[in-house]
Image (spheres, rainbow, N blue to C red):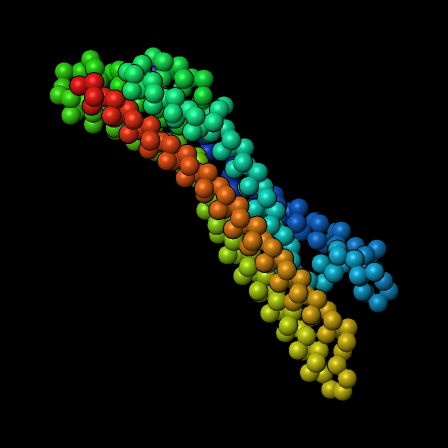
Length: 267
């Protein structure tokens, strides 16, 4: 029966930073900034207009949707920083492409011990998965089964190690992708509400209420700008980190194929 020593079992990754906690924290910061600073009395003159058209007073005129959009924008920044550190750690201590080339050369030379030493030096996700495959590579040599079954065991070990590592790499990316749409939609919502106020001011009998009209237009434009900016930031962040995850995934596939080829040639 197939056995695996407990001390060789790869430990699952930690769950990392919770996106929900990040969103709550960013929401608190965004609302405090919006109501206590942007809405402070020193931002406005006696007529309620922003002094010298300062950006913070104008932002406050954007209405209650603005702090929601700011929350989404801060969440994108916070999760992007978290993913940057996480993927840098997952990439290991050296260049991944160089590590792959060196590992393949050692595997072709059937230098299993040298490959394991290389993994210990590199660390990171790809090195962890390759190390797990190498441990299994040595274990199956002692089993009394045919070579096809041994190769399948090695492949299964690499798949299990990959299954443990990939969720850590992709964590929070789905949240960033969702914000790319939500930011734009909330910005559109604020724009519509601002235009409703503008048309309401124009519908008054006699001369239009110029203050109400300007406030409505200001709310519409600020929400448009914030929504587009948030959506753009989320799209850029998601694209960048998805590309990095794909690079690591391709490296995992490459080392998995290399170790399988090494075993096939050896036998």
